[in-house]
Image (spheres, rainbow, N blue to C red):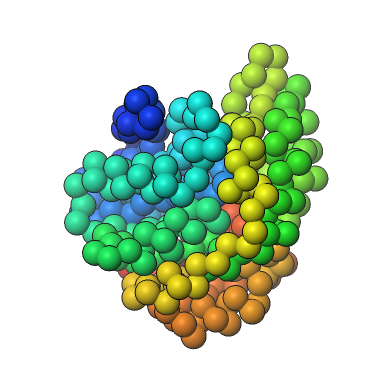
Length: 281
């Protein structure tokens, strides 16, 4: 029987305040650790189908970054960015006690994986990126600022599902049951209804919402770890030109293409789950 998920937390010191960082641990007895890091507007629950599958063989840690899920939000929105995220994730790896880990990152979680895999003496053994690469155009990133920054609220689950089908249509097509599942992952109770789990102040950080293109090609060229890219072919953040470079430079990544889907393909479809599991094995 698969063990987990078990709720865990670490306390990370930031600006004279200990932040409570929530993560789930699957299969604590597993010998090798897999770290799962979500996208900008996601949380640890977006890894449930994949983590449950991998936990048959691995110890899996799925984390809520600051300002998401059940982790603490920040007092100063300007602190949402790479330095804090990388410090928190380094604390998580240290807490695991593992000498090496496999890394699965969706969007922002993948960018953090690229940066950390490129660092000297990196603990990352294998790298899985969900619909993200070393170059991200500004235009593809700012589209979500107005949608998420407004902090939408919903009177009931049906209204939240309709909102997700409208504003997140690119991650489909999916069954109604899967849309309901993805929507539930993204909500927390709020009075008589629900709100998104993400701190709206994240979008006030110009590092995410207003800055220029992201260019990590120099980091990409330093990566030697085996790398798999899950690519939604309709993605607005990962384009065919970047895929071509990612397969010929740096780690010369393997690519699993998902036709008819944009950014990012959910870790739900059987072909995606099977491909990630096979890559790690």
